[in-house]
Image (cartoon, rainbow, N blue to C red):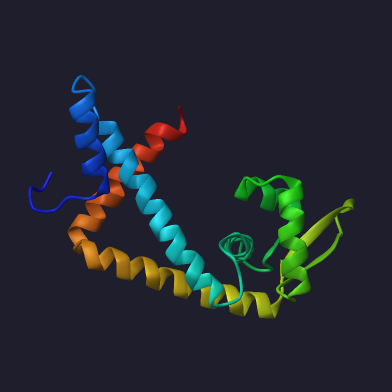
Length: 168
């Protein structure tokens, strides 16, 4: 820990050390910071997307369709699985995005019971603008705190931590 720079997690760790000096708090230091960072950046991202008239959850739907490549079409089930949403939660998002003209639902030509969800041209333009706005927010935060080498090391360490915890 840097003696000169302390954050809110340091204060929490110091409090635990005072009342429970027997605790090993290294994991709390890491995951506490990851949690707080996720919340802070989530709030910033939400603001960037709100400026474009969408929520973070709506961005996630549009971005998933965009990343799927042309023709930017997936089934509601594929979207739900990728975004880890219930079908009810997905339906609400799709309804709102369809009303806004950002996507359209149509019958699946390969399955009479199924639907396809496709980005409209308006949705494609919006998600491309939104991903740029979101990346700008993330890049500004990252460059304001770390140099390129530090950011690369952190990305590598976080990848290892994520791989190690997702399988648990």
